[in-house]
Length: 81
Image 1: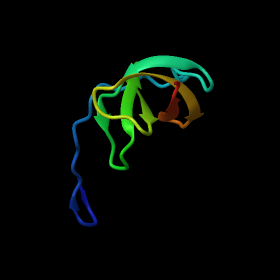
Image 2 (image 1 turned 90 degrees about the vertical axis):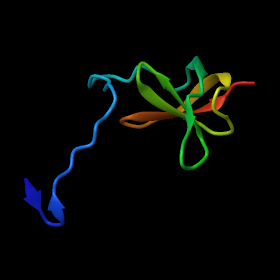
Image 3 (image 1 turned 135 degrees about the vertical axis):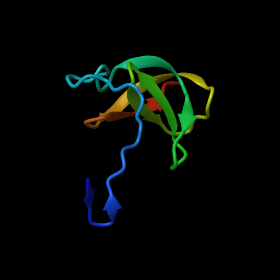
Image 4 (image 1 turned 180 degrees about the horizontal axis):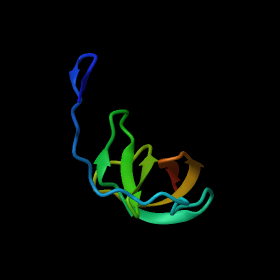
């Protein structure tokens, strides 16, 4: 199908988490491994393919985090010291 700007392109995506309630809850703590670093410098971890952004971490860090906010498709967390 084409539209304004040319044909529509489809990009592959990884496995998707089924729609439904989030696998994490605000205020709860989880042990995670930082898998990557995002564009803004936050560490990225996952729980059941649900993305969690963790500021102040680096790829490979194994940390305990507390969920500080929930979005529709992601969560934010802080490191528990």
